[in-house]
Image (cartoon, rainbow, N blue to C red; front, side, top):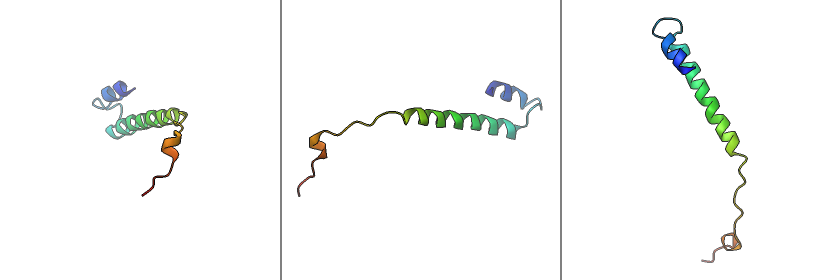
Length: 56
């Protein structure tokens, strides 16, 4: 998709603004999708030593 936009912008088929917005939007969807995928990761449970309060 980005290659089509890169070729279309110089010859006038696509404006530069549209090429940048569409390219950035696609990257944003990729980053958001990856974050949603990573959100399903279970956090590590702390060991009892990490859970204990520290005395000062």
